[in-house]
Image (cartoon, rainbow, N blue to C red; front, side):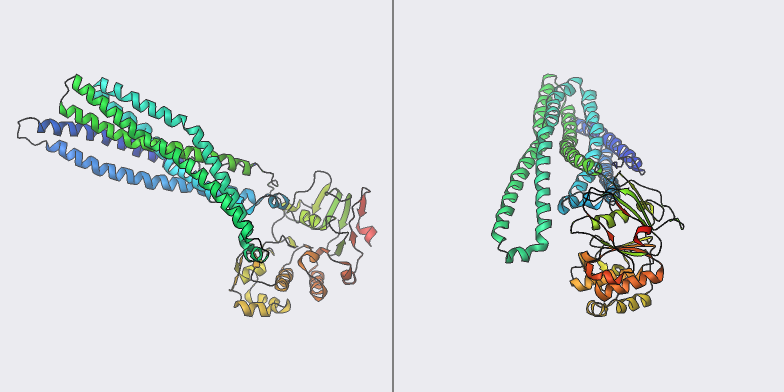
Length: 537
């Protein structure tokens, strides 16, 4: 299980401390502005010709200070929020790289991508705008009440009533607001997952007569999102509008107190100024509640994602030069008989068996892409396959990595080597990819996402080129699944022989004559299956 990074981690506590200082600075300027305003109003009502220059200067300087403090608060809050989002993004990516392929296959691509976009927006918004505004409100609202108390304690008392009621209502509406956020997020996630599945197949769906059906589904999901979004917006705006209602009621009560106590106009204006200064952080407090609920929903989803099963983190080890390439003792894969296997260094064996008997799963387990079952012992080059550094094992199969980028990178991805251009060009010719390189425009040309701009034959020969580039100690080749056979497979096997690379290759019966040793036969059976070097010799 992985954990979310702490909000105060990676020196973000310094940013949080800076936000507190900025909030205190805003509170001080509020106090100065209120009392300076009172002094100016008092001077206007007297017959003295003396101009209160200090009070006027204090008001002007306070305005500039508020401008600077709020600008700095926004920038510092955004920086802190972006830092937290980046830390979550990093932890989530690292966790996803440890999830076995079978577990990842159960996830919908669109829902997984949403963790990196929509959910991170909620996390960033909570730190950059929610938490910072909460800190600011916790300082500025008490400061405004302090001004009212210093002017007249009863002003603070009457203002506390409506403002306290509004703060209670903001807190109470948090639960339905959280439910609205969760409902909207869920509907958006389902739509994103559905579109991520369908958009790449758009033209195929059209030719299959699915357009009207898919449009009905899309319209239905869109209407659901609209209803959920309207409900969330109504609740959020209702919460944000409450401070205005509180300001009106509190202002009327404060003026009533001023009239009853025969307070001066200057005191009344100062009281209204203090109330105006309360409304701004109170609106922010309402926004904080909205962001806090969005953060809570995203946190629950993120925690569930980080709690998903993953492969253990192992320290990297050096392959044991004296250990066999593969040693399996009592391995029990789903649907397979117990496997006891020893593959010595440099030997190339064909793996065979009936369809869907687990041949591909065996290769993925040996490559460290699937977790080994608790029953049995799995050792590759004398170690846990997940603990070996990249380059020790070469996996060529449908689950091999394929990223958008240059042809150069596509050729070397997963090989553990960085080959020079001259070598790459020679291998391109040897693997029959010269036409592809010419069509795309050379090694710097772009291979699209999922190699969709390659034909099936070019895709297969790209795997062949990777095998010819690699110098792995163990190769695991799912030849049937990637369409590798005939002369291409012979070329690859000869390369493994020359490099002393041990290999397990899933290949059809028609390729049996290309291997010197008998196949390692897998079957669905309850009887233990023993496949060792001695029995295969």
